[in-house]
Length: 218
Image 1: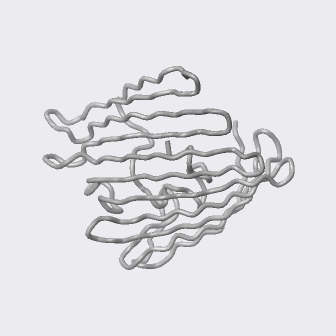
Image 2: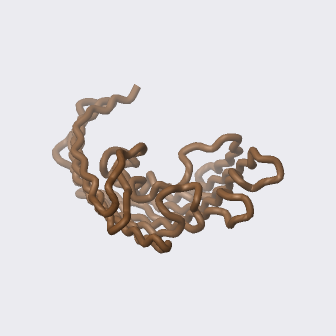
């Protein structure tokens, strides 16, 4: 779901996950049902049992919807995961999408997180917002920009904000050059970093990144 409203496609220094750090990218023992598209609307359901006998820890359930109509793509999802015995399950709700206006493609999304601690390090209750845009540059290039904010509703109150600017240039259908600059600012006590395995960040400091790379799809 978040892939549809992240202007950086869950990658590089502009990655929405830098602010989120919630949810699963894969789930063991999952059974997934995906419907065909009905007038542009498709639905998905996922269920994965706990691997601990008699416990809800690790049990995962999710529902999502994806609706495509002309230039619009709208998405929504609900996830629930057991994170601690005897505690409330972690819950994630996300809504958003994108719209292609030809001259620019706009991205927008909101995610809420409840009861995620202690399995997830950042915090247990938060709301996250993101806005982004793609602007074509000639036949082969595009500029990408995004701004995101995390409103921490937990006792820690470690809010954070992120901006990123990038350029992507397609050399062919499979090979793309890119350059991305990003900054993630933490409020007092916050230690969020950039990347899926971020380097340590001093509390209250900003993480900054400048990236150059090439992506080749096999």
